[in-house]
Length: 338
Image (cartoon, rainbow, N blue to C red; front, side, top):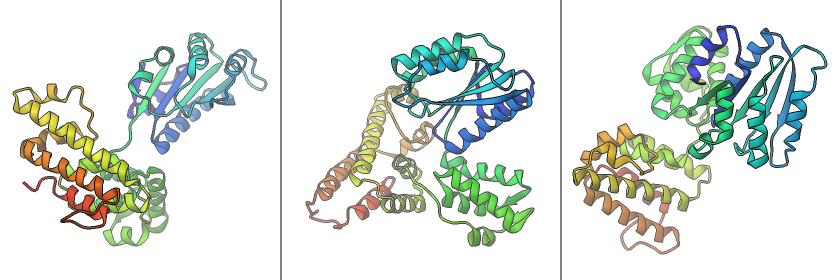
């Protein structure tokens, strides 16, 4: 069966554990916390021995069969962990995982750690077999618009709170880096103890450990969040993000928005226009903002992307800045200028 990450704690408290758990996530902190919770529950129920298999490209999948069929040396129950960082077991691995999922055993609990899977891998036979054999937990990344609430929940666990402004400041400093966010939140308790934190205390204590992703820019552009746009582009530039790749992401988003805009203008419902179109921005945000974006404006922005592409390749613009990063910033800020 499949459960949400927030249901895991309640599931583990019920008592009887499933014989197989799969944790699938691209967020290292949340994945590690889920795995730790499963390990703790397994130890409490007598799974005292632990064996770990690292399933890289050179994995001999017969080791899984050997591990599953061998007797525990020191206890009647054991935890068998399989770490598959690529999320792609290959043909032999798929067969081994399906066979393992079908194995009926009460003395071995299996914990499998995977990255987030694409649709094809998620619908594969081996993934389906594992889900049928036990519990599958997909853990999504924390989006920026929910990050302040996530931080508030973490602060509450250590008996602290903060104002909305302080939470947003902290979110800006730790965006895209939950492992560092976890460390910074823990540091706040060590420094100030229980109680409400002021904005000044957080500003004095928290490092800027944000890590930005290029596909976050489209959402900031649609939201017309000027401060976030400038922070994102400056952060991506400082981190060495390839400008041609970033420009391609922006161009693809604009093309898809134009396709959706044209389909809606032709009378198609928004949900129908969205089918088959891949957007990095949240659909709810797109639906809210799209009526304010004309097809002509989106076409002009695409034309500016083409000009910016020439600038990136060393051809100066007739009327523009010589710094392509500044031109990209100006382009992003003009998303809703009409």
